[in-house]
Image 1: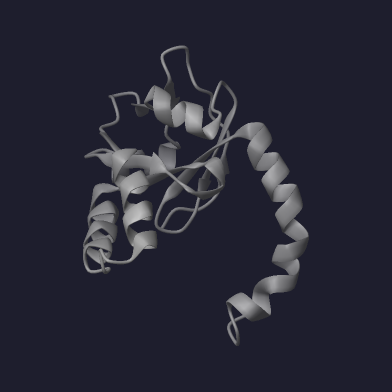
Image 2: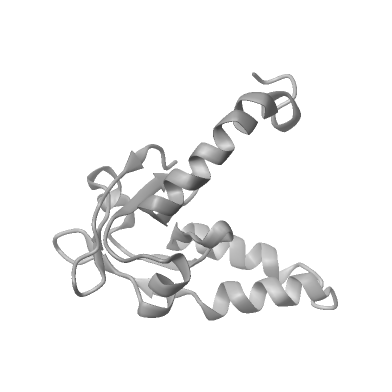
Length: 143
């Protein structure tokens, strides 16, 4: 499970330090791909394989499945952190998410998300009130 908010910076080569608490879990490899709201998703390999299996059972006759799968898999990049715990984010993914220097890495349960710091601040400020009001609809009877 991935939790928390971290604020690493991209270096001049497009590398980003993974949060220290997750480096061991991601040491054998990970997959970075486009996410919703112009962030990047970072999956441990096992979780990416689980998603791949789930999408492989979806009907290819459904246009939404084809469209989503094409973008999701075509933009995916398998990476292995270096000895310092850095990953290289491919230029195309950096451009998609608007990543230049200041980033935010958030834990999102089964994945990490990488956001441009300003984009995250904008998203979060727009969502916090909605979050306060949604618990009943999202988690009925839980919270």
